[in-house]
Image 1: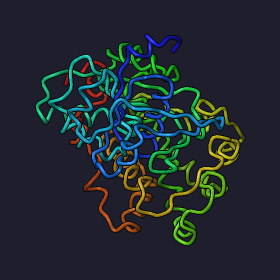
Image 2 (image 1 turned 90 degrees about the vertical axis):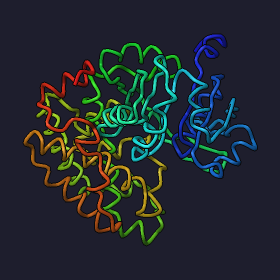
Image 3 (image 1 turned 60 degrees about the vertical axis):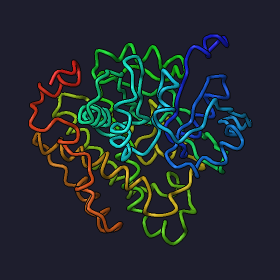
Length: 371
């Protein structure tokens, strides 16, 4: 953004005040955008309200301050304020937000799921439909979150690394160009993707997060996560499991006519990290240096990624005839470790509104919105 008038033309609401939401809201506000921050639990943003914003440590080590126009736990109030709505909550909360927001959204608003994980825009659109939404906001999903970031205090956050580019698609695809024209006013790193099927099936969190958490479960429990997740937690053996998961994801994508990126290709595009193996490429990624492991197994890397990333991949695989043995093994281990039935909580074909669709029908639905 080159002028204050251009910044002031775009009002933004960030939904969620966790690691990502707090960081994104502060980064935007520090550059002059009018930002409203929403979080459903008032106590979690009490310190932010008292200070009026968030102090942010940027990627280059600078300390900047993002002052917000408003901090609220009233969703209708938060949504009414802005043209661009950046949803930065665990994907397990997407359906709930859609159901609550159905009567609050207008036709010209752009809603971006940061990220959608697998099938996020499909589930969000289905939630709006079930709740009787009468408007047509542009629902988008990002392939991944723009930042590697962490909350480091009640009103403090840190950005470790910013990705070079993040594909984004609208639901339906015919509105992607319109969405990009709005989102790029804030972040030129967002680039158009072919469809939400492409962003969903290039969801790398599905590959990296749950498996590394489960495979390092003993270390996480014994140290409270006191090690570098991507550096110490990615060994030659754990990387082989990630590669097996990745092959199944790519094969499910191929069944839908999509040439998905491999994990190694994604690391190069997002971070310019390269190597002769996935193990080497992950260790070459400076953006992962310093990121600690989860401090517990009841963590979003499991309770978000299993039901909202891996289960929809398995569901799509079953519908279109692709075996996902390794992915199902991870889901089974997660159920045991956390004493949950993630299959019951997962993003099913019904929740995405696509059960029984042929490949052609599914592609037509995401491209045009016609069911």
